[in-house]
Image (cartoon, rainbow, N blue to C red):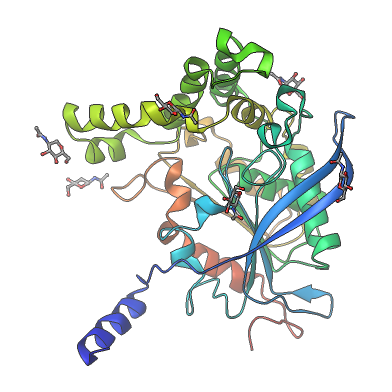
Length: 363
Ligand SMILES: *[C@@H]1O[C@H](CO)[C@@H](O)[C@H](O)[C@H]1NC(C)=O
Ligand SMILES: *[C@@H]1O[C@H](CO)[C@@H](O)[C@H](O)[C@H]1NC(C)=O
Ligand SMILES: *[C@@H]1O[C@H](CO)[C@@H](O)[C@H](O)[C@H]1NC(C)=O
Ligand SMILES: *[C@@H]1O[C@H](CO)[C@@H](O)[C@H](O)[C@H]1NC(C)=O
Ligand SMILES: *[C@@H]1O[C@H](CO)[C@@H](O)[C@H](O)[C@H]1NC(C)=O
Ligand SMILES: *[C@@H]1O[C@H](CO)[C@@H](O)[C@H](O)[C@H]1NC(C)=O
């Protein structure tokens, strides 16, 4: 490499713009006879996950970080330059020469068991967030043998799962970072659009009770487009598609890709938040936590008046809530993927939650 390119690389690294996505190692954990909160049972629940780095466990602690994805997403969606490329490289906040990153696909998502992959279709158990969190708890403790995580963090649904981890398993992690979500039951507009997505699929005659031969694209399209609208923000879209030609080209490009999703998978995913409500249990949280939302998040808008009161419901001194203002850099709910917006808060949380003597991560 020429000296000039080495200098360029060094400068890029110094500015933190190195966006290489590190390679992952895949793994699977099969749970025999997993019973869901509904009472339904799946003979074999196969959880697919990916890891980066080397696990180190000592004195009941570890260097492991659980990173949780969004609804209808999967771990792969986080393995992009804006997220993994800003967090997991040497010198970055979750440097994988020091930390062990675990990226599971949640129940019903990615390569973990789901309606479409099991052949059960609309007979798949009606899984809820509580089931998804319990399965990942078993992945961490039983399968990976980790006594205590360094951090649980997640985005959108993964953030809501982080709230559940903090309230249900208060000693499982040293720190918690929920991003782009609220620790409250899904009601109002947030439940409304999810329910519309579900019902659009169920009311499409092509859905056939879940036993379709080709995707019910009317209902499925409605569901996909509701997320497209709720998950973005007017200012960001105004810049990205500044004229009719640009917007129409985007929509025309999206339409034929609607059927790449599976209608049953999508329907189950949007209903899995139905019974989510960590609010009454927030007093259980026992470790430092930083919650980050953006002001232009239309799924979790600050106007609800929920975000600003979170810290009052948590033991004093533990919680920090950060509402990032609307800017030309934020993109609404989807800002969760832009780690540059919140990685300094993550660094601050890791410092606030640093273990004293037996810390494995800091030399
Ligand atoms: C569950 O997995 C076991 C072995 O992993 C296999 O023998 C069994 O057939 C599976 N059961 C079902 C219902 O797929
Ligand atoms: C998920 O499964 C698909 C299809 O079996 C496969 O092509 C893909 O590589 C898997 N992803 C990972 C991360 O293993
Ligand atoms: C519309 O916006 C796109 C994207 O910015 C730009 O490339 C294109 O030139 C614009 N077209 C017109 C007709 O203004
Ligand atoms: C999706 O629809 C397009 C046409 O709109 C078709 O060419 C393609 O094969 C379909 N893909 C799937 C997975 O059904
Ligand atoms: C959504 O989940 C709730 C709670 O488990 C359940 O009562 C309801 O039947 C589910 N709705 C659909 C459409 O699956
Ligand atoms: C976005 O950028 C434009 C042009 O630089 C500027 O006029 C505008 O004030 C910015 N908006 C926000 C919300 O920062």
